[in-house]
Image (cartoon, rainbow, N blue to C red; front, side):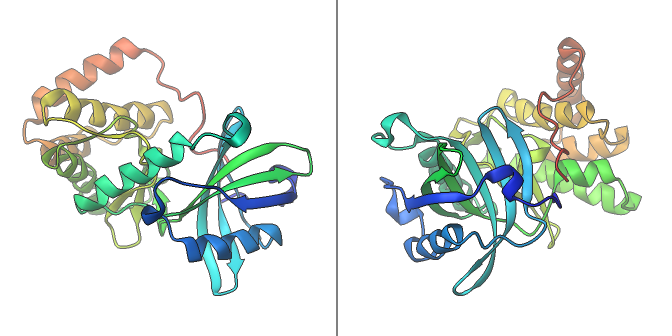
Amino acid sequence: MAGADHREKLGKVVSVRVSWTPLPRLSDRAQASEILDGLKEDRWAAGSGFVKRDGGRWVWMGDLQTSTGEIGLVIKGRPRSWLGLIPDHHAIKQAIGAARLRSAGVVTSELLGLFEVRTESGGAEQWLALRALPGETLAHAMARDARSFADGAALARRAGGLVRTLCDAGLFNRDHKASNLIVLDSGEIGVVDTVAVRRRRSGDEFRQRMLLAMCKELAGIGALPRRAQLMRCLRAASGDSRADWAVIAQAMRDAGDTTPRVDPLGGH
């Protein structure tokens, strides 16, 4: 997590309010009110900072002090919807995707609130607040590569097992990148970005596309695991590791340079 003072990046909040959402049952209104007060009073802990920035959109992670204690948050910021009069479809998709994953037994971030924010600079933004999952991204875990061979093999099997779980539940995550997956303190793998989770019939194409998304990003940051661990991941996902690897390897060759446009390791 970035160590720089967050005021240099987020800007001091001038006004903030809880935004209307058409899915109230998928958000915690009491918790949202506590977060609202923390944002108003700028009660971020030291060490909070950006984990991703892409134009006017960004992802921030940090601990916020509320009336009931400190809470770990992931905040996804973006320019406010047109005139603020239409519902934020990004937030709706996040909530629906999270509900679908939870129904399949997958750990995911809890949606805590959607806020309309104006900063000192005059910018009007929507901040989507999610409960942070305890752990590190799969991208960071693989780039660090400090674990034993046995631990790496177990992690590869869990990553593949997550893909199998989604397929068995008839779900497809179009943005199944390693930077969107969290290796929890328990060893499980959770999903933090659920906007792109869709219902799909199970099939080789959707399984391979999720596996490819992980492999491409890891290759692009120089963290693609050894072949033996890749095969463990693919076998856990389908059992037909050779066929899947042939498709994935060809797709990666066709893609050429797989360096991510936004560095998933930046800011940490």
